[in-house]
Image 1: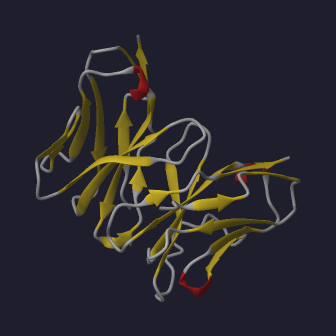
Image 2: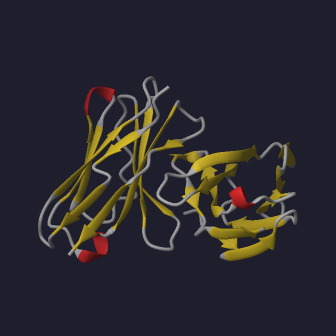
Length: 112
Length: 113
């Protein structure tokens, strides 16, 4: 079946612009996660959605970062007033609660 | 919060040899330890995982061991093949902090023919 999909695959933006990254999880998966992977680093947790519960935003690095999950499915990660240090690969994962997390291919964000 | 350390950062082995990657974690409440393989331009893919009530798990050429007392776990790949070349990440999850994973910084494995 279809895996986790993310769009766009690549995004180049100018410093100060806002960007939106999209994640389509696997159908039926109630949990959705966003991670950030900087060059040569591990994955850094950003935010976690589980069903209709309030999201766990404890990993968001600043108030410029926000995310929504509409209808318990698609999620959008928004970065406002982008900075060069926001350049990274943004990975989305989904799972049935507590089970294996399946990752998408990521969105590579470059802030000039 | 949980801190996961992973070693080595790079590993080069000859085809057919074994490869071992080690991770340590800080939170004794962690109870789930997955290993992911990431190929260039792709998202991480789970290759094996272990829960804290088990000391060892094996799946064909891949095995993971867990020492809860010492708070470390290791990935063992036997009879390595060139297609095993990738970046491998360990992770740990603490039951009382949701289901987000805390990742190590990765090991770049190169298997030379």
